Length: 276
Image 1 (cartoon, rainbow, N blue to C red):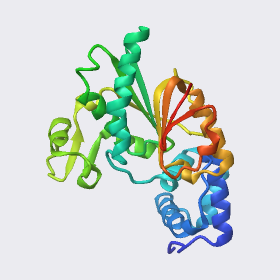
Image 2: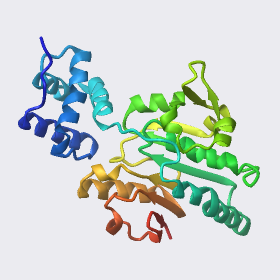
Image 3: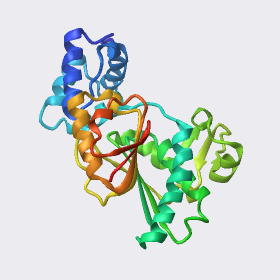
Image 4: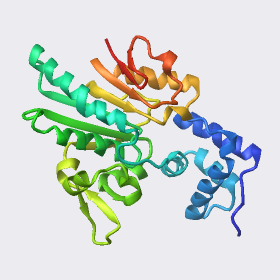
């Protein structure tokens, strides 16, 4: 049986409402072709005859294994290392300097916890780890850790492998490439070295749910909340604030549409907010 070509408007509404209920992400009607193509791949993988049969399977009791694959397919976005370089310049410069001076002044534990929320295939989390590695002398005797989370287990699997093509490495300079990556036998991919991988942990997490872990000194949440409606954004922001340590920083993307939701955080820059 040939594949169905495209979701009908009614089918698209049904799937988009389902995506929203599961993830908090609103899919714009302009994405109907993209969503159709991604769902059609799942139809082929599971030998479903049409979109309606697939939807019935997703929403039936026992459909949860395929649900994870479905969310992987429709919510994944491409990223790259050091996306928006100014954010990483701040992190490895002013942020680390302030954190180290604060530790010397207050005697707080020499521990630094960073969260890359909605980390996709791991480029942001590893970029943060590289920043920490470049400051290893300043952070001697510190316990540093980076957590990368995403709703998609498929992208987390790629993140854990830590193998990337050239296009993801455009913003990595030659010295960083030599120091923190190993070229693979195919000559077209690069693998993150163990020294960068070691501080990084990846786990599955839905931003609509609280992350029940000790608070973080810095949270990066960029280029993902643009896909959430206002109600969902407010839920996510509440969870992020609860996960942020006192004095910690939230780093956001330029188009997230959350700037009026960040009280009582204090604005430090257009992309940077601090918890009092």
